[in-house]
Image 1 (cartoon, one colour):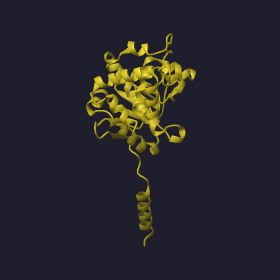
Image 2 (image 1 turned 135 degrees about the vertical axis):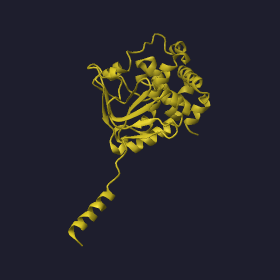
Image 3 (image 1 turned 120 degrees about the vertical axis):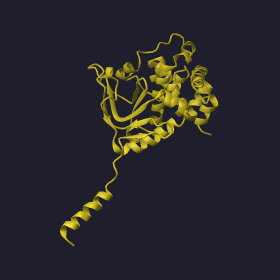
Image 4 (image 1 turned 180 degrees about the vertical axis):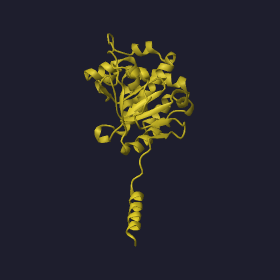
Length: 256
């Protein structure tokens, strides 16, 4: 066999065996909302590019793209198509996103959710990643439909004299940002340390756990009246967005 032909055949074999590169973006099949895995120009609002905010992102590694796509499909399947298409234009999943010199697990703009993902060994479990989507999307819904939210009732569920902090950015800067359920705080109607940052972060954590908190969340809500009051307010808010969202619906998400 001529040597040049052997080289060509070997090259063809090597090419055929090379793993297929993961796509830079996919599309949610139900909604056709794009899910983008690369940092690109125009991904952030222009006012996030000021020297003070200095928004930055690092593209998601190929090895996490299929997993991220599968988990987002699962999370987005819990919402009616119309609601998603009306409120959300795209989702970015990156290895890192950074604002104000701080790394974020997720954030959102007027119609875009930004998430980070990595291996479960790095803390990015399936539950964490799915919960992050619900957490960030809930901020978009809260901004767009603030009239549906009973803020007075929400604040009334807090302990007498309780005051929220200075928001999520301050909580991250000072390290008061633990998002794990705290059984002692739950007695007061505050699910996590991060819930103390602001009404919005408190709401975000409630939404995240309604979707992904499982049976532990409901055991706490059924035990502590302030927590159940906030859960009821949150479910009422979502029910005004779509009648699908009832207490029975969210309880079923926790499993049998």
